[in-house]
Length: 344
Ligand SMILES: [Zn+2]
Ligand SMILES: [Zn+2]
Image (cartoon, rainbow, N blue to C red; front, side, top):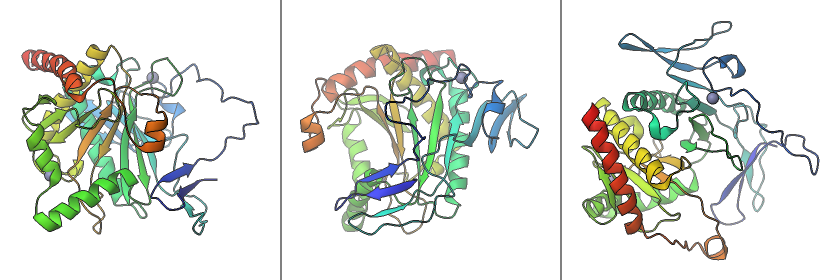
């Protein structure tokens, strides 16, 4: 079964993944000895659609073809081995209250570095810029495909339940409808734009700039701990100007975002002594009929156990205030930034 189910009456969605033929009590075998994302193991993945290669001072965009796998790459993007959605899901629909639709879409993996032991917090600014440029390219292409309503971009820096390091990678998943978390933001932003001509997210950027929750500001971006954090040390990165999508980033802004990501993730990993985080990109859908948001990145450094208040009430408890988190992350991120700018 590969389907998307919608809740009886709320907008909540779930994806039912194909079962892997496991019998009760059987566990999924532990990870293979070889990492299929590592340089040299390209044959272990499907051929890559986009391979960024550096030749001298120039960057080339190439594609793997049958029998010709490109080596010495900087970034690789290929279809996921265990996709959450698939271009060929069976066309079966369910009627409410058991609404379901085929989980049609594309699931790609962007391998962010040829090196296994290079966490995101240590990837340099040039490589971060390459990652963002490749991402922009793939997202643009995906929006030109039929049946794609949204392109969700995220990082899970560790595999559930495994303490071993994972190869730095970004997941790119398209969905046939806009995810509820983005839709909720878009409803609010669009209502304010229609009624008042003001983007509430631009107002938030203004309010948090220079305040007790600011973590770092660069030329074009600001990082801050949100007023309501669902996880301890959660922080958001917003472009200072109103911008609806990562597709609108200029080269200059992309380099600045690379500096922001490197500084805050570097600061976070040192301050919290951890490489674990979840990162999501929230952009407006590029499909013409949809509402817009002010695009941004949300980072969740620490997972917490959600109890009754959170699961049952939608009320989040935290033993770290956003202001306290901003102090800790701010000091560490500013130190990273100073070092990076110093050595450039
Ligand atoms: Zn690896
Ligand atoms: Zn805005």
